Length: 106
Image (tube, rainbow, N blue to C red; front, top):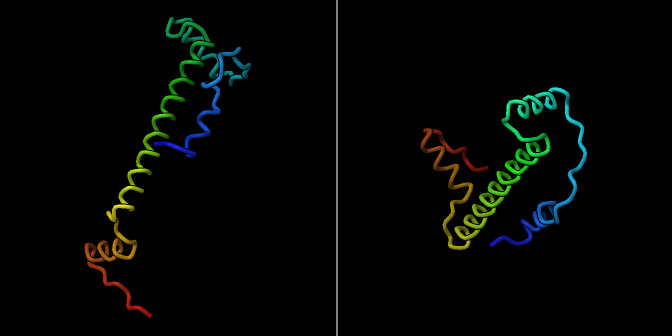
C-alpha cells in the first residue's frame, strides 16, 4: 500500500540494532522534573523515561503517517473512480449555500 512515501521510515533508528543511548543535555527544568518522577517512583530511571516518551512520540508519528497515506490513497482511488468535485463546482455550491452571486465571466 505504501511505497516511496514511507521509505524514509525505514531509515529511522528503530530499524537498526539497539545501541547505546545518545548523550543529550536536558533543560535544567526538564532534568529536575524527570528526577522528581524517578524519586516518586513514576519512572524507573531517566533513561527509561526518555525512551518511553520518545517511543510514544514515535508510535504517534507512525499512526499519523499511516493515516495520512491511507487518506491519500483513498483520495487517489476516488479521483480514479470519478468521485470528485471540481474546484469551480465546489465554489458554486458554497456560493449558492451562502446566497452569494457568482461574478460574471470576463
